[in-house]
Length: 309
DNA sequence: TGCCAGGTCATGG
DNA sequence: CCATGACATGGC
Image 1 (cartoon, helix red, strand yellow):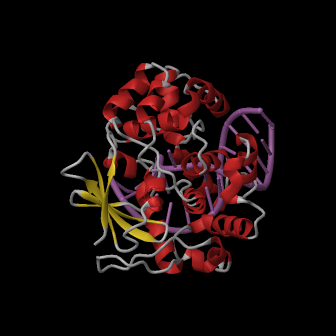
Image 2: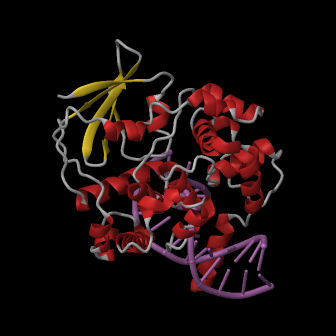
């Protein structure tokens, strides 16, 4: 099997591939197996030189696709040196050293996050897996289970909403399809978004139904190279409010404005450290209950029942 | 069982 | 502008 060693130091595959930025990586023994574009790849640490060992099934002379994806030459220390010296972020860095951002394909990334809304990460993985198996093209790889590429916008645009729902994406199906149509028709020029100023790129993405600020920001950060973008999701809201604002009630818009200015030019990386650390190692340090005090759900259900009758 | 999940949109104050 | 509920589906 063709293999290569990418020289790199301080690259943590576990935290990078399992931190909720990409959803198709599976840990098998000491390796990570996944799909990048149309290629299967297995990643592990090289026992000899300091670096990442990669194995794949074809094109033994071309590894540019993988270098682009993993971005091993990114200067992590330089980026970390721009972070604010606040204790919360520093603790996250200490506990997730070597966490990096991948450079993903814009369509797969956008589509994945459209499918992510109000789902747990395990479920997001499942839906994406279903989508690839239903509509993607088979990929050559050493294992026996079927493995497929992520389907193109053209394919998804041509599929019925009912077929999409069979992949368990629920109410996200029309959003997924609409995004595929807008991208396939060129009304949204996904591959060239990185050339636009941030505000205009975000505006383009938010024209897609089902794509609001958070999903747009994930696509901009994880696949369009906007390194300053700091997606604010439910977890990050909890972290910011509890650990940066002493648990005072802060409006979502205000939290976004704080994050934009506080975390600096590599805010997106900072966000990923906070997200991963407080979602995993820091489970006990962030209150898992919803932020906003609201009517107890039991009472809401009572109201619903009353209304139905 | 009932709550919640890497949200967004429409609606009613 | 702000708050709230609907929207599918499934883990815990």
